[in-house]
Structures are given as structure tokens and as C-alpha cells.
Length: 151
Image (cartoon, rainbow, N blue to C red; front, side, top):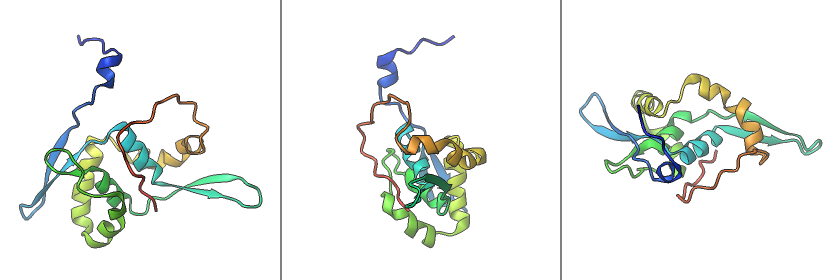
């Protein structure tokens, strides 16, 4: 049986899993797990906020265009775990990389980050209250600087 993890143990920087992804021609890259904060930023990039100017009602829609490239930007890294791309790279990456190669990357990124098809579909349902600031979470902002991926 494992040990109880207290506050100090839980607040220590966790070592993120990094895996090698090999392509058919022998080239390779590394993909890593995201932190909780990085996952939140990634998920917010997949939700489009629409505010009706007449009624002031805010609605949310899935914005899954470039999903694969956005996930690659958040997970492709060097062997030491430092990310390779900057958030603004997703559009260029989506336009320049073959679907086959991108799919190879994304399959591994989804696997190690536990992102299922159901997760993608549930983003809008679960994100509405979180995105408008009405979340009841008392979480403290991560000190790591992560730039949002914007569409």
C-alpha cells in the first residue's frame, strides 16, 4: 500500500512522462504529458465564446478546428521536456504537416495525456461556467507562464 501524500509532496513539481514517437522513415520527436494548467489552456483553446450584443447572453461552441496541431504545440518537446513550439505555431503546423504524421503525434499525445473522444465532445458542456469566471474553484494560478492558444 502506498504512502499518504501531504501538501508539500503534492506541490512539488512532478516529473512529466516523455515518450519518443518514431516515424516510418526513422525520424523521431518527443511528446510529453501536460501539466494541469497546460491542459486547461489547451481545452480553453477548443471552445469559442459567442456573446450576443442584443441580449448579452454568452454561449459556447466547440472550436475543434486545428485540434491536432494545437495538441502537438502543447506536447511536442525536446528530450529534456521543454516544448518545441510556441502557441502561435499551431496554424502553420496544421497547414504544413501531413495528416498522417500529425496523427502519429496526436495518437501518442492523447494516450499519455488521457484525452479521449468523449473528452473532446464534453468540452463545451463542461466549460461554460468555467470560462465566464463563475467557477467555484479556489485554485491558485500556476507560476509557470503558459500563453493561451487563440484561434
